[in-house]
Figure 1 (cartoon, rainbow, N blue to C red):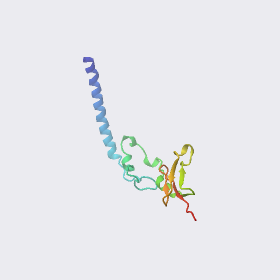
Figure 2: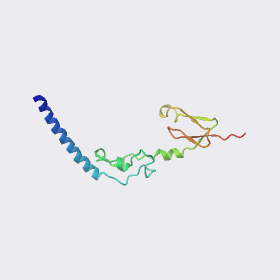
Figure 3: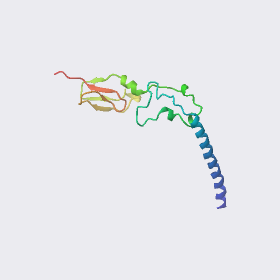
Figure 4: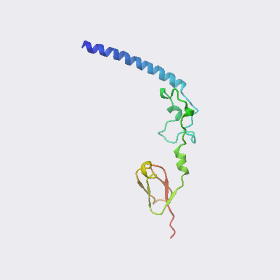
Length: 135
């Protein structure tokens, strides 16, 4: 029993010091690391999904303490890029989408085109529409 008490005491002291050190440093970092001028993407001012975290909140904490945000990649949001993709017209009532095929694509899905209008793929967002039939 005495041997266990000797082992536990130093571990408790070390863990309490680490917790205090982490608490002080992270709060100090968070206080000076808050940036309100960050855009969500180069072509979007704010978030476009309910589950998305704003960039000004995401770039906080010790991980980003010495990070130069301007030197990081700033890719455009894909939500606007996929909207520029033209609607693909299909002869049949079903469209097959595999995201371009190969290792860069996604699993093949069939999209039902019975209802009028464009229908987007759930994986990549490419839109399909049935060609109008002239009888």
